Each structure stands twice: as structure tokens, then as C-alpha cells.
Length: 117
Image 1: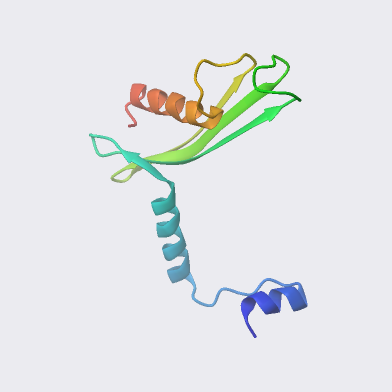
Image 2: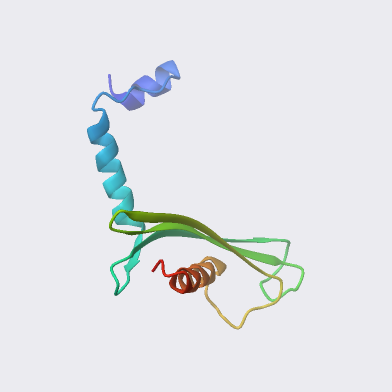
């Protein structure tokens, strides 16, 4: 019986039988998918952006709160730091990019200023 079928019939999660090897593969895949860039000094930047809005109407309406976020980590050798950046804007921005991309740029600037990228 396949794991998918077992889950749907019993309602229980199938157990991982491969152990730590699977975890290593999953971590490697996640790092590959989330890699944003590598700095000239060797730091790797991994992360995921997100964007959304609260309120009704078109982006040009002032009643809408636009939200962006960037969650990730930077690594260099045995050093690693985790971060979260949040961005919101109540007025129409001159920047046409999604708010999550703006949050990513803000995070990158902060990390550079801190010497972490």
C-alpha cells in the first residue's frame, strides 16, 4: 500500500523509514530552492518572499494596506543567522514590484550594514 493511500485510508501519517538520510536530502533541496544569491565575500542568502494586502479596492486606493515579508537566513562557513523582514505601505508606491520584493531589498541592505552579507 502506498504512503498516500495509507494516509487517506487510516488518517495517520506514514512513518519515515529512511531516517536522517531523508532529512539531509530535504535540507539540501530546500537550500537549493531558497538560494537567492551569494555575496562577493562568500555569504549565501536564502529566503522566501511573500506579499498581500488588507482592505478592498485597487492598489491605488489609500484604504489598502500593502504587506510584504522576507524570511530567511545567511550563512558563511560555520556562521549562520536567521532573519525576518516585514514591510507595509499605505500609499501607492512608485516602485511597481510586489511588496515582498521590496522587503527582500530592505533585508539585504540591513544584512550588508551588519556585515552579514
